[in-house]
Image 1 (cartoon, one colour):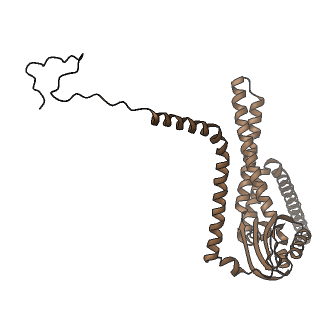
Image 2 (cartoon, rainbow, N blue to C red):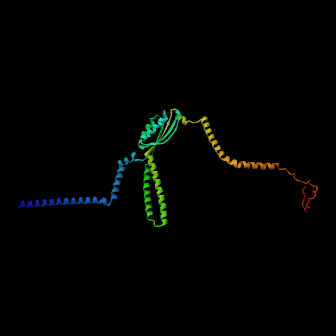
Image 3 (cartoon, rainbow, N blue to C red):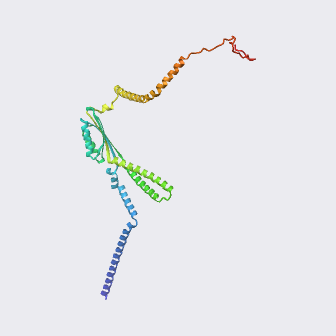
Length: 326
């Protein structure tokens, strides 16, 4: 009797434990299915919110460490490189050709070339445009053409200006598209004219912004290097210390010649007018003055005081009460 009762209690406990396990399994499966359905429906219902959270998380990571380091990388910033270098060489023309070849090998070109040749005093000024990533390599190659006398390198970070231009261009394009939609919906001549004027103004602003962006892109993509190649007879002291009596005399003589050239040019322009109008006017004035000089003078007739008037001349009677002149 006791053994049967114990067996029934054990069977009941095992059944109860199995039921609990089955219920737990169903509950976990249902919860997993609900979580999966919720996860599947969440992106479809609110993609923008998910992206915003992802962007916020990435922004937080950027502020935390790795993002901040990546944001300050040089290759992700817009930098304008400019440089100038002066090199003394034995053969200016040969060195100028080598400098142009260095710029071409780097993927750039020669933007300007000015030369003054006088044997040892020859000077060549070159303006080279090279890719920014090859800027320092080209500068070092140019310095190796001879004896470097001067080097100046400058940089300008225009990252913020580039980002601002991108945002303004995007906004201006949206404004242009809005004006075009309004133009398509215009139903009167006055609305059509006003919207066309506004559209033209917005398109002009957009073109100006895009031109600035292209200019910045050109300056950041291609750096500028100004190269001065001088012969062995030219020194920096000779060019910087150009003072003294002879230098002043030379400058004054150049100014005098320039002034005389201007004066002769003005005189040549006026001379035809003087011949046409000045000569006849001068001859007429000379004839009139000569006639006045040769005209005979007639003496004035005067009557002495107290003398009788000449015959045929009547004298008015004196006015009573008037005083005679002494």
